[in-house]
Every structure is written in structure tokens, then in C-alpha cells.
Length: 420
Ligand code: AMP
Ligand code: GLY
Image (cartoon, rainbow, N blue to C red; front, side, top):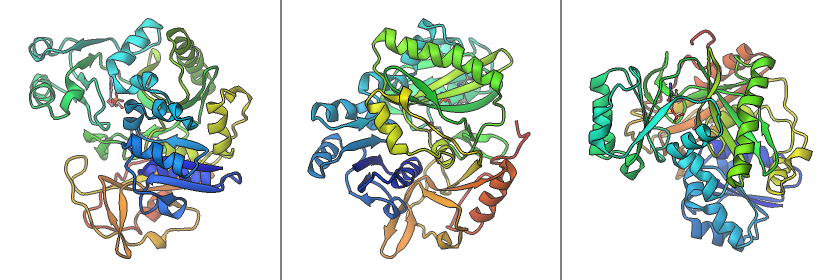
């Protein structure tokens, strides 16, 4: 089978790396890919948001299955566009993609179907929102409704910070039209976990859980990023919690999709807060998480292509999905200045010095002559597996230290237990 992966980050590298292990793949393409993805797939210079160009590419290369990594093309309707042309594609259509594309849409869905989540209100007028500052007390959770590359959420500790965030979002429009609407939520305390699920029209199957580190600095300090590291499985999960998540969140979500005519096919990423009152949904994303995918797929023993096809054919219920006992830890190396502005084009060295059983997934890299240079905010994801969590963690950091580029930053506390 010929498969095209759309995207060019660490998540897409992990997807392509895992797909490449399938004996049924005859040719793997990635658009646009990056310098690391080029090891496992033929990279084609078509942007992940160039829907027309991607459709053309899929037809031209006679692609049997397209797998869409990032949220933006999903929200733009890549799946609908490809389906119209008879191209098989793994990912939710535009209607379902609103579950990530609009926080207000998801909050209304959760409320309508009695799925546990934080209380909320939505605002479209800056003046009204300024009057409502502190409605749920502090910290105040302020979210741009639309897509903002994982940076559209501000947890304001006091009134001054809240007003500043509102002015930036609705006055200066730092997220453009994504913050024309703002959702304000009750603050939930607890332990976060990411649960990625395969979903087709009839079935929802959770993958192994993961823990993400969203803030830029150690000890969960500094602004939110796309994710600075992960480990899998999450250490807070036990059978009782899994069962509560199944009955209180997964089953009502699938039933809600069916009731609302949301024909979801793809990956539903559920951001969970495990509170004293049980698990609650923080957010839905409609794609694999980045960098959750790197840790989660490193533990998958089944053929990922089989699973993707089962989803597309609505036969997920028949698909066996096997996970290894091994633990995984992923540490992200980011550019100086990230998540703010950052330089590009810095030479990366030491990629050849990592141990054989380590996978270095590339997030933002490209070739410059015969060198590999930085080309994004998140640059590399170093994923290690081990028989125990501590072994995986130690291996990840030992190898991170062998890779260099000027200004590289990474969190030292990824996978450190008791940090919460
Ligand atoms: P989101 O993009 O909605 O996942 O939000 C980004 C991050 O903000 C989450 O991973 C949480 O750490 C935090 N967050 C979002 N909503 C809440 C909430 N209601 N209470 C506490 N923390 C939250
Ligand atoms: N790591 C969080 C996300 O992919 O949204």
C-alpha cells in the first residue's frame, strides 16, 4: 500500500516511523516532512495546509491511504475534500474537527451530554469579558475559542494578568480571529493526563495513557508550549480510574457523537484532569498529540496501518490492539526563545551519537547543504523505552546530552516522579 502522511513535526515522524514497520507498506510519502522523516519516507514539498496541492499529490501518486497529523488541515476540511475525490483518508471531517477548532463547540457538546468538565461561560465582547474578570475567582482560565497552536490558553493568577491576557487576545488580536470568542472556565486542580483514543462510527478505543508537560520551564513554570516532553503510561492510572473514564467520559462521548450526527473517524485526544471528584475533560483535540504520540507509539506492538484501515472502514471493534509492557519517556529539545520567537538555521550535531535503541523524532529540522539545522520552535524529541519508567527516563536524558545546537533548551524534570 502507498501511504501519505500529512505534516512535518515530531508527531508525524512518529506516525511515519511506526507505519514504516508495517510489512504492507510499499511506499511511504510525507508532505512536507522534515530532515528526520526523510529517513523513513519520501518527503514531498507540499505544505500541510495546501489542501488542493495535497489532493493533487494523492491522486498523482495513487495513494491508498492518507493520514493527517495536524489539526489545521483537519479544521480546513482536508478530509471532506479528499473524500469528494474518492481518496481514503484517516482523520475526522470538518464538522467533527470543530471539537478542536472551537472550545465553545466542545464545551456545549460536553454540557449537552453530561460529560464531566469545568463550568464555563463564553464571551464575544471585550468590555463584557473585562466586567466578568474573576467570575470564577483565581486562577482565571481564559481560552481563545479557535486554534492557536496550543498557546491560546492563559491561566491568570490575578486580575492584572487576566486583563492583560484579554487585552492581548481581544484588543491586540495576537491570535487573530481565533480569539474573537473567548471561553472562561472554572479552574480545575488535579493531575493532568492525556488519553488518545481511536474512534470510528461505532467504537472508541483508548490507547495507552500519557503524561504531557505543557509549560516551558522545569517545575511547570513559564508559558504554555505545544508540549515539552511526555511519558507513557501515566502513573496515576489504575483500573478503577480507567473504568470511571470509560463509563463517565468515553461511552457518553461516543453516544453523543452518534446522537449529534458527528461521524468521527480518527484520533480523539482527551485532555483529562484527574480531580478529587473524579476525571474531568479539559479539552478535546481531534488528532494525535504531540509529543504524546512519540511515547505512545513507541509502546505499540500492533501494525498501525491495520488500525488506521480498521477505523476508516468502521471495523475498529474487530481490530486487536496490542501494547508492550515497556515504558517510554520523550524529552523535547526546543529552540532558544520558544514558545516566543526563536532563531532558525542552527546546526544540529550529535544525532549520530545516540544509542541504537533510542529514537530521535524530528520536530522542526531541515537540511541545509549536507547539514541538519533547526527549523522550528520544537526541534527534536528524544524517545527512550525501558523495562521501567526510571530506566526509560535515564536513557532519554543520557542521550539528550549527546545532541547539540546553539541555545537548545529542554526540561530536566520530564518523567520526574512526585513533581506534581
Ligand atoms: P487546553 O489547550 O484547553 O488543553 O489548555 C492548556 C492547558 O491549560 C491544559 O493542559 C491545562 O494545564 C490548563 N487548563 C486548561 N483548562 C483548565 C482548567 N479549566 N483548569 C485548570 N487548568 C486548565
Ligand atoms: N501535547 C498536546 C497537544 O498535542 O495538544
